[in-house]
Amino acid sequence: MISRVTWGATWNKSPTTPKPETTTDLMSGLVSAAGILAELVGRFRTGASSRVETSMCESVPGPDNGPRAPGAGALAGLRVIEISGFVAAPLGAMTLAQLGADVIRVDPIGGAADHARWPRTADGASLYWAGLNKGKRSVTIDFRSPRGQELITRLITAPGQDRGILLTNAVGRRFLEHEVLRQHRPDLIQVVISGHRDGSPAVDYTVNAALGFPWLTGPEELAAPVNHVLPAWDVACGLHAAIGILAAERRRRIHGTGGLVSVALYDVALAMVGNLGLLAEAQVNHVQRERIGNYLYGGFGRDFRTRDQHTIMVVALTARHWNDLMKVTALAGTVDGLAGILGADFSTDDDRFRYREVIAGLLRPWFESRDADEIERQLAGTSVLFSRYRSVTDLVGDGLPGLLAHPMMTEVDQPGIGRFLAPGSPLEFAGTSALPARAAPVLGEHTADVLAEILGLSGAQLGELGREHVIGEAS
Image 1: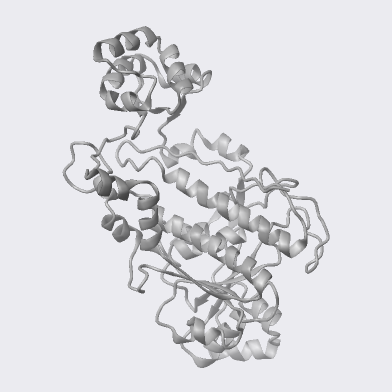
Image 2: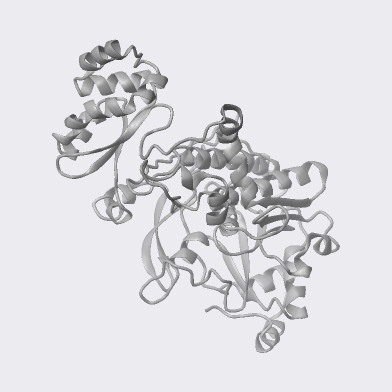
């Protein structure tokens, strides 16, 4: 069957920190690519095929791992070792875990730098850790000792067709370099995330600053750069890393070769600046795109205040959207008359964007004379794209019933934190329900189990390693 992916993603610019309008489209495209590759890998591994759409395929016997159990996930049986921290690499690994892969995160004893990262609970538990490590297993080992390095190497290079995969952003550790590891397993797949292609460091904020987006973000009248709060390039980089693993695993299935896959945070962002036409716009048109606040670039869309002091984002991307907006606001005749005076054609994006402030001035009284609930009721019967601006606390306040009903969301019981709603994968595979979200592990929770299962260590051996502080315990 032909693989087809659907995804749900809605994002609205904040009135105070607007973002480029294509951010969610970019993420959705990456998620869809990951879904297609996950299905291809699953098909290779099990002999099954499906439509990647709303759930997953029926159980069909496969050549290596037997049937794919309903609800087991497209990547069930695939094992990935993760040695990482912060956003991109943990997100890439969790993306695979949410599709059924066995992801084992290996950290130093006591945890990596992100183990206690904000946001935290009042008791100091990291909600960040809980969010980016859902569904993984956790192992803690002394990275500095020769015995610890040997254990880590054996975990990474363990035999098996669905093994020998490492995702990392660790630097400066000789024993984790690809040429060293592949001596133990020549077909090793290793995906390495870096800041820059030459290995020099970078983070989302510095990459974003280097590529012009802060000068496009924020109110029109502002003369200073504005950083956005969403780590968009970390997210995109993590999804690229997941795609890299799936592509490399497929290549190994076909050709029997592993290899080193590198992805730099700066390169991910630079590619998007080029792909979205921003580089060409500056190079070919010799223009610096100006800030436009919360307006939609190249069409008509902006935020409007309501009588009861809410804010609603309204977008008309197509002729149908535009005509419906004119009809519901009873402004079609007025706008047609204005077009005649201006010599404009408001059936086109060009003129709707060119005269956006005039159009917004005509629309503003309609919104300001109505409460948000009434506006939403009237727009709901049209094709117009709209959403009320909400805070995150709004989402878990009056928006909680919708979250509880959302099939992607599951209430998890996170040790040290308690119960809260957590998302699973946004991908849905035809034929069965998606995997529910699973809590993140306690740091080091699975150390003994994993070393016994994969390396065959006995209880006595594990006890000795623990006493010598080569391995850690759950903490």
